Amino acid sequence: DAKHAEDYYYALLWRRQFAEALDLAIRMSETDSTWFEKAGDVHMFLKDPAAALKWYDRSIEAHPDSVSVLLKLSDVYFLLGDLQKERSYRESIYGALR
Image 1: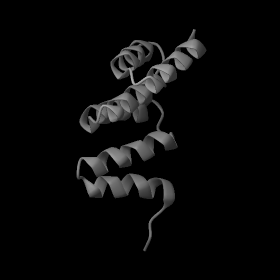
Image 2: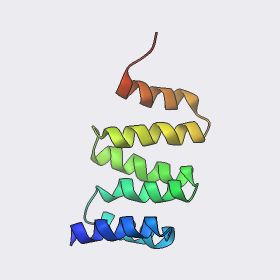
Image 3: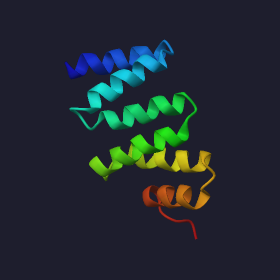
């Protein structure tokens, strides 16, 4: 069930079994869009922000008001060197400093 899958996912991350965690997240995302974010998270653990971006984009499409995904998108754009998008996402949450 979903709760056991989530517990197992976090156990896999804790054990640094990222390939298995990613496989689980992808399989679970076929029926539950909340797993898009978790798939992106695994890619961040794998130091692959470009792949994480694809999953976070899918997640924000499914859940446009998700603050956690907006923050992760800002982190991804920072790592990819797109500081304008990084700032845009942070300001959408915290507001602009002027």
